[in-house]
Image (tube, rainbow, N blue to C red; front, side, top):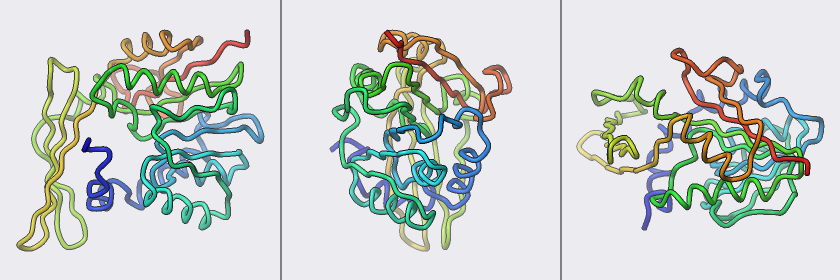
Length: 247
């Protein structure tokens, strides 16, 4: 089983992955970010939507949102988030390497470093190709992640994150000449400990620009945060946007 298929990761470590603070930050970003302001009633595909951090506020804003994820438990939580927000979204259980709906969407988003999960680089390319295929002419893809440059700015000694009744020790290891990284997490509560790890590709902005172009996107732009700031030494994220040609 690949790590992203293991529900023990997503449920056992949900207090780290799906915090209320991150949910609020996503809602604030949808409310204020110029990069997340789309034409009224836009059809939006949220790849790897998880618990609906972005699905729910995007739907509440009036967009026609479809969230896709592999795990039914996460989709159930996304449905609850939409209900709490007074919004409606379509939620689909599917593998993003396979899911595509030709020209069915005006916008595709892939948020919260949900890109680069797959061991084979070509599988990560398939996610971009599926996004391109799913966009109507003139549509846009927006990917939000930690790039090689932004990841390097904080990777280092192990980190400790407090959770109710315990803590999570997080350690990152760079692999394959900065091609991939592994994150090891240990959840400690009293006399018990649970461990998990995940391995992802980590791409630079230049590499992702080339990948977007290979998938058929044009007008490719990089930003350093969801406020639309420049991708420079002060960047905290890589937000990369590309458009599907109209012809």
